[in-house]
Length: 359
Image (tube, rainbow, N blue to C red; front, side, top):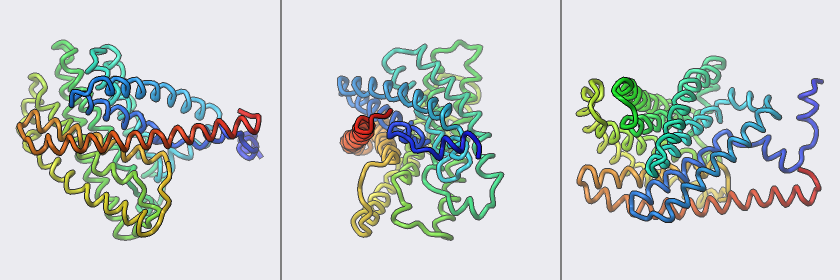
């Protein structure tokens, strides 16, 4: 038996166990908090928005510390997650969280820090975009992969769209030398995100048709199917409003014509997802308790609210703006409930560690 195996086989303290089992998609907490903060600011509710911005920043730094701890102390588990089709794509939340936090900081005027986050997200997007799918899709039997397709696969598309938003925010901060590169990356990320969404939707639909989904398997991560289109609306609107570059000018009419269609489809998906939740929890009595994937539900709700508010203001669609206001209230309430659940989980871990006298 190797030294690593011996360490993994030994009983872990509550804190170390929590770190060892840390969900690869926990950066969705930053995404959810950041997008609700952006929505509140868009609605003119500045003080709560600022509080959530700080919470998102603290979560971002704390999660990086925990992820680095996990990578150093429990590297075999990290590698196993990177090769697991059920959770590997959740690592793309790192990209989206960096972009969402960067956008919120840019709105506050912290452009240099936001630019660092955007460029870091672009680097991680390129690395993960080639390395993760290769690990997951190329080294396993196709039928096994299809059986494990789930809502977290849409996070790849979300990460791409978040990068498009980040580049649109970065464009006014760069000079003409880099403007074309930023515009190219924005259009590239938006287009790739749409193609990835179509591919992931096909794979998930094939999984449902061929293998079905049990109530236990239909977790909140499936809400990302709606959030990935909602963020495409915001990303597309950002590209349409970008300053002149040849590539942006070439695709501007196409993107402007699609964003409303995407928003309408998001609106159609919401009752379907709510109904699936009723089917899961009310009819089949799956316990409704805190799990990290609940953050994957907060972010799509908040993103849909931001997309709706954006359409209501930029495209003069009062109905979309009204829907966005209601969606923002719901997203803020769900955010608060999920945050309380996460804090309760944290307190339980700390209390259990104190009782056992370990860390």
